[in-house]
Length: 218
Image 1 (cartoon, rainbow, N blue to C red):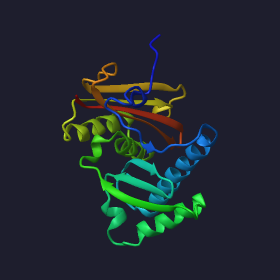
Image 2 (image 1 turned 180 degrees about the vertical axis):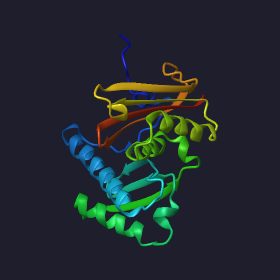
Image 3 (image 1 turned 60 degrees about the vertical axis):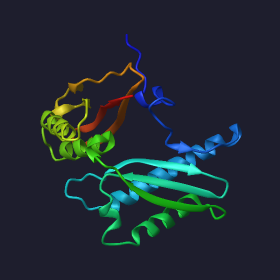
């Protein structure tokens, strides 16, 4: 059987960078890891509550965390930043206070900045949220996958693969279905591949979405 490996971890140091940059002693490493998870969960929960978007897509590509001795720098890569920044400029400040409360870090300064993703649908997380919204609205999974592929074709990708697994269309037996368009060379380290796995809760049960996007070759 083929041995599966996460495409992002496989490419670390070549075409992929770390999303958390900090140093800790081995005995304190788990604390830093839990801190990162708290920051990411807090931001995602806040965005879910406050962003009322018709498509149901939050648009968080990824959250980058850089820690120094007295500063925690958080960069949120958003596909649709105007929903968080426009209309209410105090939202970022409010988000900052929420994260500080969650972390309980009085001796360290927290900076949160927002970066716009040029092509949101080139990022698998944004695409997975779009598919999840469609599945929750009881759209056929095949239609949802085709629509997602159409969205990425507008963004000049070289290839995309989408897989959905679980009780598809409410069938008794769970199965996995996938669609590929173009090339997705998972074994080529030079190939820059964006990947994400996403779970969505539907009335039939939990479905898993996996997306591989072949962006470019270096």
